[in-house]
Image 1 (cartoon, rainbow, N blue to C red):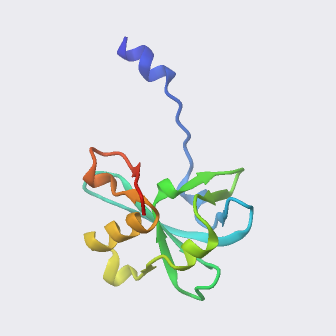
Image 2 (spheres, helix red, strand yellow):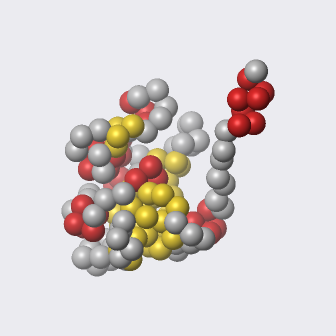
Image 3 (cartoon, helix red, strand yellow):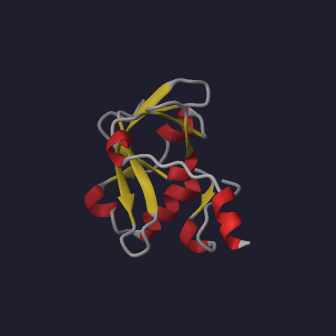
Length: 129
C-alpha cells in the first residue's frame, strides 16, 4: 500500500544552523570550502543552492553549488562530487545580482553536471557537463 511505501523511504534531516560553517571537502578529503548560506525558492520550497565561502583559490568570492553536488560525510562535513579545480572555476555568486536570476541558477547546475530541478519534473538529474 501507499502507507507502507512511505514508511520504507529513508530521509535524513539536517538543521540549517548546523549546515552553516560546515566544511566542504573533495572526494580525496581535501578541505576546499565552507558552507556560508543556503538559497531557497520561496515559491516551491526547494533548496536552489548553497553559497560556499573560503573556496580554495577564490579569495573572498562566494561560489554557488547545487545541494545535489554534495553528500554528507560525518557530522559537519560535506563532500563535493567534483574536483577542486571544478569548484575553483565555478561561477562566482553575487547575492545582489544573482539571487533571483534564473539564468545564473541554471549555469550553476550545468557547471556541476546537474540538470536544474525546475526543468525536469522536480528532481535533479546528472547530465554531461
